[in-house]
Image (tube, rainbow, N blue to C red; front, top):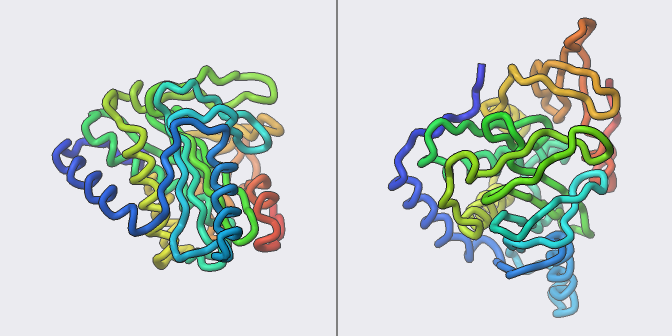
Length: 288
């Protein structure tokens, strides 16, 4: 049964919520909207370096958010490319101080990011009836079963760079074979949100992430929030082995309990690329 949110609320409510989020954003983070950039991850790193040069030790109490509707050299997990045709999609990086993140263990952070993206997209799709936003472990965001968003998290000193790419206006043709293979993609426009505003979405998401980073969170809360957005009927295909498994439940450390479609005992999956990218923050032990 699909537990993702089906969006049937009014556009008037959506507009009020968006305006409120944008009005608060300047108080929560330092905002940079770029006409074009090679990579918002790299642009955020450069801004953090400039803070240090300015004798601010890289921190001034505000998070840093860098966004663009045209990213020319974006990247995804495991060195994959993130394609952007410059026609109105969103690339956003929010730099958070990892020393004060409210959620432990750190392997849960990517799951929380997925939840906040799903919430923002659900708000912006309220005037597009029949659209369902859901999550695929660990943090892919789906629209009607197709990938609409990807997340890349990198560490840079004391900063955690949360990179998010959202297909707002267009979406790429994703190869179904080879090293760049992946889930079929879609966009908000294809889902019916033809008037979605890239900058407004980026600001709303930066607000959500900054508010979360300054707040309180714990593993049981995250598990409940993430599970609400998951389509538990959707099988997963493991990239390395092509094995098909069915998700059972999310564990408090971010691992996913799965059941092999071909039969056999349940086991736990860990997203290794997340552990490798965050390895110096904590030293998690792989468990099967």
